[in-house]
Amino acid sequence: MKSDEPPLPLIWRSERIVLPPSGRLERVASGWRMLTPDNPGYWWGNVLVMDHAPARGDLARWQRQFRDLIHAPQPQSTHMTFTWAGPEQGEIEPFLAAGYVPSRLLVMRASHLHAARAADAAVTLREFGEPDWEDLEDMLVSGHVSSHGQAAYRTFLSRSIANWRRLARSDLGNWFGAFADNALVAGLGIFVEKPAESGRVRLARFQSVLTAPAWRNKGICSALAYEAARQTAIRHAPSEFVIQADEKQAARRIYQRLGFQIESIWLGLERGSGHDAIAP
Image (cartoon, rainbow, N blue to C red):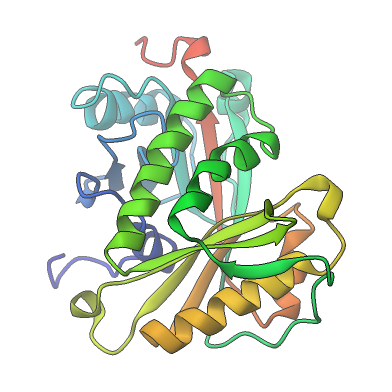
């Protein structure tokens, strides 16, 4: 990044941690472009980060920019996803009328995590070993509610898991799980920046925190997040932990009890190919 460019927001700096080798985040005239050629169906990995909230007339302009900057170099990405720093939502009504779905994301940070209450005694918390990865896709699929389509989501997920395994093999973090009778009932990823990228200020990014429905409200999520952060701090010494949460999710309160504070709000609009997203 050139010295005269604006600093990269925390959310996107942390997103770079989990990008695959082919992924890139680069400045464009309208803001930032993120491309993930290895995973073109990843809506939020192939996205335009806009410099401002949508204004009157931006529906046509933004869609044209997405076609030029995302669809043209990467035709397999048939969705459209835009995001911008909140809290102003701007003129989103034309987007909603055109079939876009809005989102509101909280970016939270903490220098350290508060100790959580003990998890259910029947659960063992530990770092993933190689055999544990086989169970991860099924657990994430079972806990996912989306309009993206099951087959498309599994493709996206299998490619994401392959990238997480690559990061784990590179000693840049790992997944951690809660196991009951050797079955995976909760999990999360936590990955760190390479030291050379940020000197002594090093971020650790949480990824895809999920607990199976039958095991929720037992203190497992908070205990697992604390244990993952504790082990990551020992091994990698990050300066800050970063996590993202949907503003409507109850998990945000769990994160706040662990010591996370809201750093920024990001709003977004997304639409799949079912609405002829790439037509003029």
